[in-house]
Image (tube, rainbow, N blue to C red; front, side, top):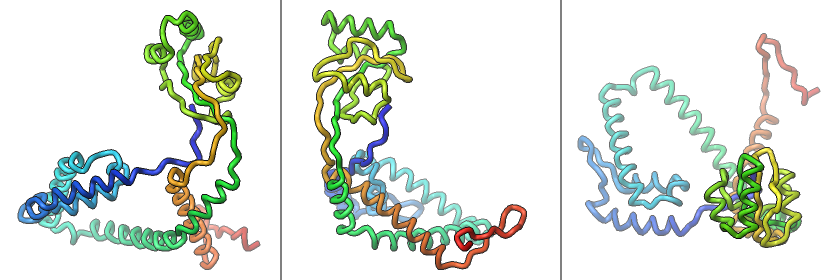
Length: 279
């Protein structure tokens, strides 16, 4: 129900530090060899590299939990490569075609990565953050929970139980809500209008005395806190700033390449498409 936040939270560095220590312990065992497949080695370093190259995994899964699954995948991959080599797949036209396509893609990606990296400097990141803070406009925020149900009658029954103190809001949410109860902090525009109008008219530590109808169903709302919003800390927005700068840099590179190139385009019937920018 909530709209996307402008900035996303970055992954924790502590997990990676712990993973590095764990890897050192394991790497010292068996001379760093994880497996030997038909005489070919798979090393701990290869598995560790795969682990670190996927921040989503390394931030949520311990290295020792990742290890056994990754090892099986790498063994199977090694077996498939050995079989392909034995079948002389590298000499086939299909292999050569896909290899050429892959080389072209890698060349494009490395070129763009190098240009983009040169533009994502600490100075540029800091500048964007300072602009964000300077232009930030505080807004009223509400922290709320809700119980979402399909019928108005059930919503009224829940309110009656709250009135009589027959059950707590959290217990009633667990028993009845078809959505997660905790909504956290949100500004007025982050919710559908009917929900926001009701929530922002309420006082702290109160619940709605009538069901609130929206396109999602009927809500019973409990307002936990009210505050003025503040600019997010640098650590919380750093990765999003980098992503935005990268997107902007790629667009600028592509635009420059187009400006400095001679390009002719033709429509599906073979007729030349006139360059509107040149008119």
